Image (cartoon, rainbow, N blue to C red):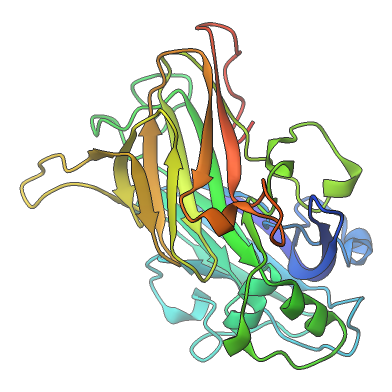
Length: 345
């Protein structure tokens, strides 16, 4: 068992869409390793999505959450929590639901304790006033790896453990969400927003809309949206795609020219009552709000394959096309790309 210590801060920031529009967000910022006297210098620097949490089954996780406050909304004294969505906590104290656990007021800390037991793809988010705080951007990806995970050994570089048939060569997480600019503007201007009037105008992968989903180089305009969504692989490799839906809508995702082998849903390996393999191939991936799906693709030919939403309007930016929930799968000749240093690289 390994002790892993992580430190996050809750604050606000702004993000940019490809059409140049700027939108106010709430979110989390990584404070791990930041000296205590420098923590509050990170106020107003939240990212969308929140930092990737990459843990291993059997580890002990100590996650400190500091509520840094909202410099753009100094009047807003909301508490915040971290809720590991779909994760079986041993007691409700660390679950992040404020009615049954503890919420963190401005200027205070809380240490959460977790012991992952089951591998899979999860997500985390603030559960204080969750409709508003999730839409405003307090969402992040969470990967729990099997206890025997070893990226240096092909037999143990798996999503669900050796012998489960979930080996992969590369992996990417794709966090799906939407953005209603009216809601974000109203919150920024201290105006009440009627959430029954929720009408997204931007559909995002990893906090970005197309074509920003493709930008892998550092970009000052995307500094608060640090994760690209460009999928790259060599021909013949197995690529694990971890889809996470932390928006409020259902989606239908396809990769033109590549079938999808669905191996897991909601952090559960697809197995029958007697251990039979229930993984299956599909051309379109359907999933709803709050769900995760693990998919393996095995491209054999060098090419560019578009990944997009089958709902046409979700491939737009405020009505302009192309945009929205689109990215590319770029496949190179075998041996072109070096080994991947980590998910998303």
